Image (cartoon, rainbow, N blue to C red; front, side):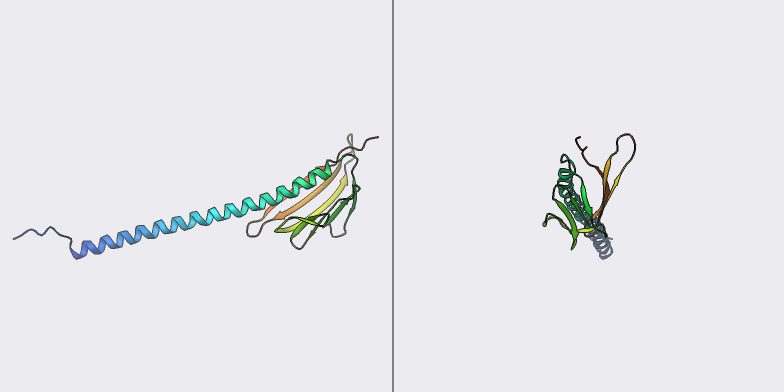
Amino acid sequence: MKSQKGITLISLILYVIVLLVITAIIGTISTFFYKNIKNINEDSKSVAEFNKFNMYFLEEVKRDNNNVDEISEDKTAISFKSGNSFLYKDNAIFFNGVKICNDVNSASFKFYEESGTQNNRIVVVNLSIGKNFSYSKTMNYVLESISI
């Protein structure tokens, strides 16, 4: 009897099935990888939008002899004695009527004075920014001291 050392039909089918399984596994892993990369990009956009707001708001809060003039009843707008104001509407935050942040889900402003040894004046800002994956943060800003 002769020895047949070739690829039989059964071994060929097994090779094809194994290659299909390996290709499916690699495809699934790469799909999850690229979805996560997309999520990270969206998260970083949300953090960048928060940083833009934070830059403008810190400048206003740290201004000398500045104080909160008024907060709207629905807590979506705040104005300062310096004449500058921040407003949340239409999923954006406006600084003196100029849009500075996009994709804002919610924003609220609150002001209170802390009694004690330092008598701090504190503005509390609660922001939620982002489309699919929102970045939420509550920040307490202490107003600069008023010179006497």
